Image 1 (cartoon, rainbow, N blue to C red):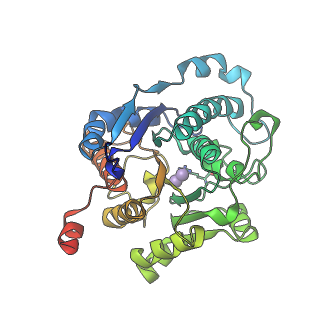
Image 2 (cartoon, rainbow, N blue to C red; image 1 turned 90 degrees about the vertical axis):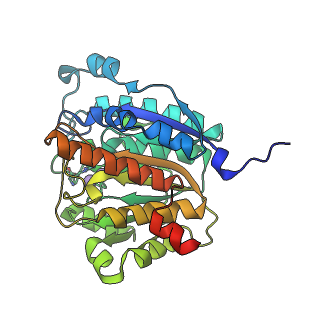
Length: 319
Ligand SMILES: NC(=[NH2+])NCCC[C@H](N)C(=O)O
Ligand SMILES: [Mn+2]
Ligand SMILES: [Mn+2]
């Protein structure tokens, strides 16, 4: 009988060329750039059994639900388009997760988080989530100012936003099972929601105060006290400081260093509990090509670390 090591786990990679949850063109090219940079080969070398079927296009849905068929609902922009696209991803993720695959989703914008985590919970009901981001993305249709859905996925995951158009989104994530790291741009309505539901949230202030090692330890023990729960890592590239990841739509200064971001990924890899990851909001169109490449390369490195590639210093330390 072949010995199945952790390294041979089946890994589905979904390139989601979706931009409807925010207003800037180009984020749909993120997955293409990540794959072109050699991400699939790298993951292969790490020993995963990769299932990558080419990128998922949302052109059909975008054409069908054009702007004239998708007027605002309250302040929400493109609500039907985002729902349709996310429902599609939700179903794919659910199938692959139920088949026992780890699912890596390359965005695309962060509205996809409601689909990837929602689909993963169907396969792993005891899932917990680390959300790495400058933003809390927990606006509801009532609290949103901008109206873009990439600022709202967490509220759908927690069942705080209930709409007929989003009936597929079951809202099964318990607020005690999500923790944030990297926050530094939160709106007042979001702050109230975080407080009301007692959600674990570490801002950059906490990272400065405690250091990234302690913050990750506290975040993981809050959402996964016994260490036995499967983990989904939702990584918005704007969690990193713009000096490391400039090509993103809602960059905010004062973010995580590359090393801090990588440490988070390594710590998650070390748990052996990763079942899903999102890497979202890489928009190569927003900067000059050198800065775009820098952002793509950093994103690839984060993914590789989450899937078990140790940084040199880490290896040296453990030898
Ligand atoms: N996934 C992101 N980059 N989200 C940015 C959200 C910004 C703002 N809080 C909003 O709700 O519109
Ligand atoms: Mn963000
Ligand atoms: Mn985000």
